[in-house]
Length: 434
Image (cartoon, rainbow, N blue to C red; front, side, top):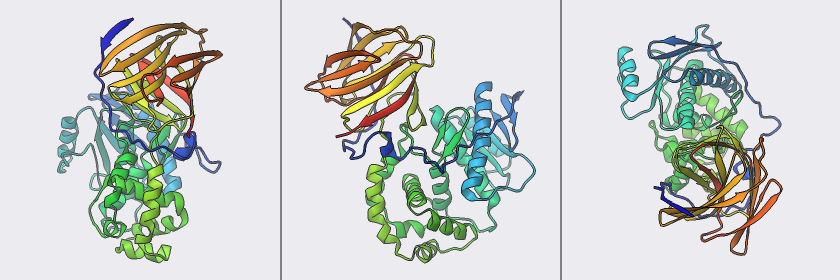
């Protein structure tokens, strides 16, 4: 038995149980009519402090690695196709759209000042119609940096297709960008307007926490952004549940009509206020299922998360599960990944991890102090390990490939994902709930 102290940091967790099951409960299962948008990017060439990538639609400058510059190029070229489908329109300019990604906020601010604009201090990204350029700088996580990239590209795209010169309300333009910029990306194809399995920012939880202050009539009468999380929720709710009416509403807004509340009630033939209770009720269920600890956890699609960390990191489910299953495999030559066995809070939990050669270890953290035990091994598998977890009478029954084990647990039988000092792929993520 070995001991080590692990500093654990975890964001707040909601305790509500879900009535629906598996990852379908977050409305992320690909419907037949949904389209994957897959467009190749350009080849990066060295420029200044970074890379210039010329694609079919975008001229992208990034102060990242060359590989990330080319990945971002593929993402925004694919996003252009997705945005063209959603807006049913596209910018008509034959010139490339310009997007700049800087390493720091100071480099970002200098670039904006150099273009003769005022810097919106406190922001992470910026689009201005005068230059028709999108500017942003790198954020703490990979997913959020790429989400911000798509967010600013959406502002750019939206501005360039509008017929009217009228300045649109900030809550409206930010709602579009917040909603669509949540994405699935598998390295080749993108889908926009998704509900991630996990993000450090957890926009759905923030929206739920603010939902008691929701007033649609007040929101629709404002010129400024009232709440980014609520604006995300408003756009996602109406785009999913009332796509035809919401398209008509957006069309009239983009054409320059000024009274958003009147437009809405003309189109929907009902009062705005009548939609508040069902929206809030829907939002209670429309939540990310996992909570991130440390960096880095990155949503890929509705059954796939990547995680990497220099320390032990966990991603608990927000609710209990009758059964939880996942396939863990390598992003590194050597790795340790697996599942939570039990979880009370950030300082009290236990987990099981398997290494690339099949070695098993359990970790138990009590009041922030960690112990771990070697638990033998299972047959090694180059393709990774399929793990299922079922709570049973104060223990967890675990099946790893064909091997079955039982582990007593000291805390609540809440499960989730776990990794130790490595990079791991978690795929085929599924669960059933009470």
